[in-house]
Length: 288
Image (cartoon, rainbow, N blue to C red; front, side):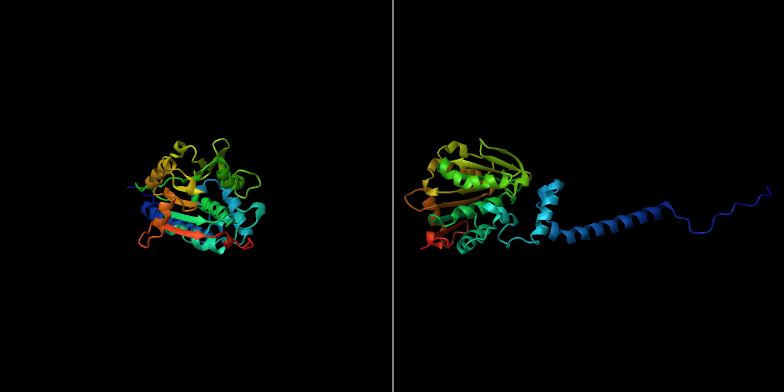
């Protein structure tokens, strides 16, 4: 038998592999809870449409913009980007009728039909709603969420440009307040693609077949009383497939589809259609 004394183990507790694993789990859980709390604290200040979180430069620019404007930008029925839709950097302040009859009713009506007088302010209100729709994702009839596809429609080129040119200025021009959100554009096709995948395109009803779309999530129709039945028949099915919204402005005259839709909106028990009428003198800038 050897006279060598047995080797002494160092004093203290020996950490086994199981104990080490348990400790690492506790550390990971604590880190996860900390990150969750940090995100919750920063969300009111740095909130940004989730589609842009991969674009760090846009995220930082948007965060700085919110800081300079003091946080929340609009009421619940509005959108923070409305701060930049007016030319000259002027803030968009809706008229009472724009707020009450369009913006506050937009969420609950998939078919909004308006009879608006000349220079009542309808074009500005439409542009504001176009901007909001470009950052709104809704599931289609299959429950699938895809980036928005928004059509701006008018009877002819000249009328379409009245709405399209301010939208183009907003997202494409270097002077536009939202130019940094644009991914690409096509001047000939009158198409703008944003970084979140949303698309907005100007269309004219004098070429009805061009109004066909695979999944149109929103259609904004100006001078809708002059839109032909063939044109309506080409773009309305795409709205139905995507559970999209229709915003049509015009005069309920004649026997066309616009007048039919307007009267459907007057029905008390029709939740899908909503109709309203606004005379020109509702614009405070017009001398009655």
